[in-house]
Image (cartoon, rainbow, N blue to C red; front, side, top):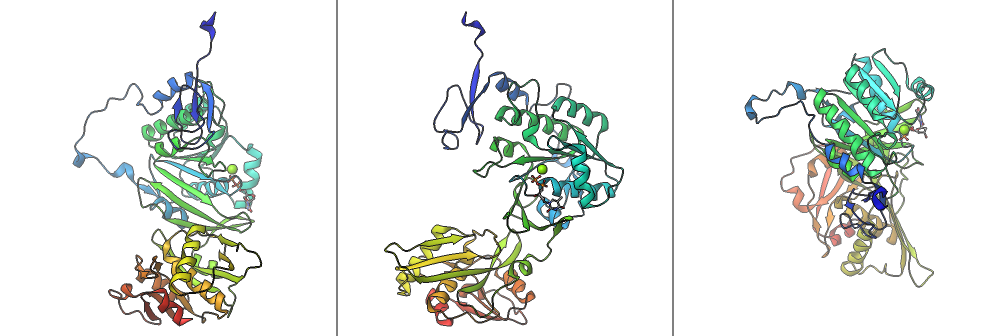
Length: 456
Ligand code: TYD
Ligand code: MG
């Protein structure tokens, strides 16, 4: 009687943790209420995901004998994308491009396909989300395509696998992994087991045939690709495409890269004719900065190896309520609170009863502590209602005793400031020790927030 009972297992949608019963909190990633029930057959199929195909025999090889030719990189002709990929697409790599819906993932990849097809690379764009006509409409906005670009609307992974094996394209785009399904897995498309199994199949194709595959993955409200942190482990490279919906710029961030450095960013602007590269993000971020306003300071943060100047704004005013309001946009709220406490204690600034708002202009998010000094100076400037002079930039990490600590690659930051016409740079004193002579800028070393406050 009970033999017909279907076996099911439970998966955490966040990290893919598997359990035989439902759990309120995931032991793997500590997320609450993320378990969903899926057919058990899925878990059996899953084990086959990363395995080698039966025919291939593998044995140990001498490291020195491995040929590097297969790992050659193909430039995408989009410099910002190449930078994040670590110099181009690696043959046989699997790349995940994550991001909120509507941020521009499909547009970016379509533009990449256009450039690759122009160079004669055989490209296959597989979409499970849009019809051929819809993609064509988008393609028309972007520009013209050569004949080495093929489109394929399909969600059945077996069909896709057969097509790829037959066509053997050089680059394949899967848009998106959440729409793909494998008949051998009983679960719905987008479920943990489907996504995991589909990625396993694609991984095998990429490595086996030497095809570079790009997978588009949607992000859930928690900010991880739906279902699958599992997926992040399986792929070679993880890129996130992010940006403020209300602003037109977009940032492509490398989160994981087996072939290059992570934390590199690429900056794009979404225009009516598609994404356009922003080669000088600092200039872009500083656009429209107010002149002679109190509470506005330019600081420099490093994204990967790239310095980006941003305007930090602070507004400090007397609170009308017992509990002052504090708000931080584009940076860590707790960090701002901590810096305010440092100012109160070390400079005896009476800001405890003040409302304070800190904002990184332009909508970019910065978590690097190097902008601490910028935040501190913006707050002091707003509190005293005295503007920081034009052409001044400040960076440095601020410690709990009010000391200004060294930051990495100070020289790179100073050079970026010179490039954008700044004439004075306030930076940690220790950074001056091995700083070469730089033309066109005055360097002021500070040891503590007291030193910095004296300048305003
Ligand atoms: P899309 O690439 O479809 O996003 P995703 O694949 O990440 O869901 O981008 C859609 C948005 O981009 C849409 O809101 C319109 C905008 N867009 C432009 O502004 N200009 C363009 O040329 C294109 C193609 C899209
Ligand atoms: Mg899309």
